[in-house]
Image 1 (cartoon, rainbow, N blue to C red):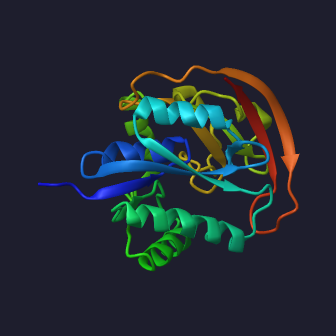
Image 2 (spheres, rainbow, N blue to C red):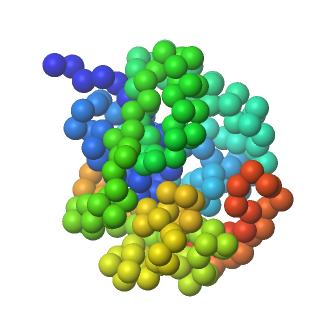
Length: 227
C-alpha cells in the first residue's frame, strides 16, 4: 500500500526528531521544512547555524526546504512565507504535515486551522504522551542532542550547552518540563537512529540576548555551535 506523502516541520531539535522517527513508519516523508533567520543565517528561535541544519538534512537523506524570514518577522510576514511554502508542497502532492508538539492546545489548533485551508492534515506523533516517558524513550533509542537555547527566566546559564543525558534531566528544576515543551530550553540533535552519520560540531561561546517582545519569553542564553 502506498504511503501518504508528508512534510516534517523540522526545528532541528529533539521533539521534531522523535516525531520524525515515528512518522517514517507511516508516511513517505518527502521534505523537511524549517524557518531560517535570513540576516543571521540561523534556525529561527534555536539560533543554530544554517550549515548545521543542512548537515542534518544530508545525514537524514530528506530534502530540506528553508523558509527565509527577516530578522524581526511579523505574523503577517511569517504566514505569507509559510503559505508560499505550503502552496509548493501541495503542488508536490503533500497531504500531511508532521509536528513535534506534545501538549500545547492553542498551537495545535493554529496549525490545524492553517493547514485545513490548504487541504493538508496535521499529524502529531508525540501528542498527549507523558514527557517523562518521552525522555526515557529518547535515552533508550540513543538520540544525541545538546541544549542550544534556554529561557533565562526558567533556567540558569549553566544548562546552556549541556548534552541531554541522565545528569541533565536529573538536574532540571521541578517546575521545568522534561521536554522543555513550555519553551524552557531548545536543542540541536546531532545523532539519531535514522541519521546516516552523527553531525560533527564544536561548542562556541554562550551569549545572552534580550528581545523587546511581550508575546513570549524575551531573555535567553544561546550556545553557539561551530561547524
